[in-house]
Image 1 (tube, rainbow, N blue to C red):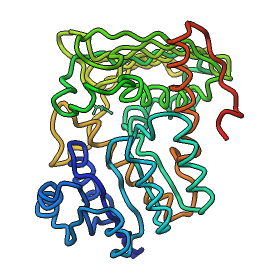
Image 2: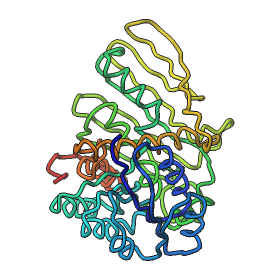
Image 3: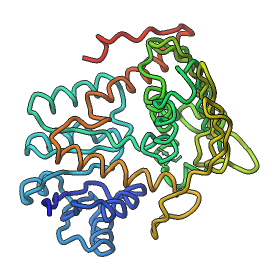
Length: 346
Ligand code: 89Y
């Protein structure tokens, strides 16, 4: 039996509930300490998930505990400081998306972790949704030939403002909250992007940032993708939290239909299949596929640590995502198409 990795969790807010449930389902990992600035929140999490130690100060957590990893599901403004602490104590780290408020900060965080040789992964979970694993396998199997086009669409009117009220005041909102997922998926499915054009909109009144954005990406393979995201789309039924879209290749296509259904037209004909959720006791509709993806993301992190390999969404590999988001803000501001150079990422 391989050893159990002992982890700390910093930040017991809204989405951390999924992290805490998720860790319970990851074989070979356990959370032994929880930290939140708000003691009541940390104690509540400790009681609910039978976590032995509670902290309100992150440095005290690192100083007192022998940790094999730390999970940081806090907001992005805190990540540079918290990851720096983990690096100081040489604790492998998984940090929630968005990685950091801007690309320059992402680069500083990565440089710091790399200089110390501390493993760092961004908790980017959409690519770990079982549906997108299947889509990627289909593409890699050659079923639809070389991809030429994709559209990834996230349009709903979920009340994100109740669960994450800080988003009302975020100047960089939609691209940071959901755009990062979509450009990571575009990269995952079509390869690196070399340029993009973006337009942003603020549709809801009284918020500080954009709540809708449309991106056109050019990939180095020659493929084009469109990413369109909005929290101001009134639809019935509301597809939240599903990403819809399609991928076209030289010999076929994959359409992602509502209800986690894939319609594949390719070398072996045309078929439709439903992607099942994992059926975990703690997950509930409509969140199931996102909740399942949390567990797959965490399991990948532990597996990467165990094997001593770089994770799929390591800090370094995630720089591409954040270079694209930075470029999207620049494009929207200037009306220009922005080229993405590999050099941007180091
Ligand atoms: O914040 C968003 C995300 O990252 O995925 C879903 C979400 O939690 C709410 O739309």
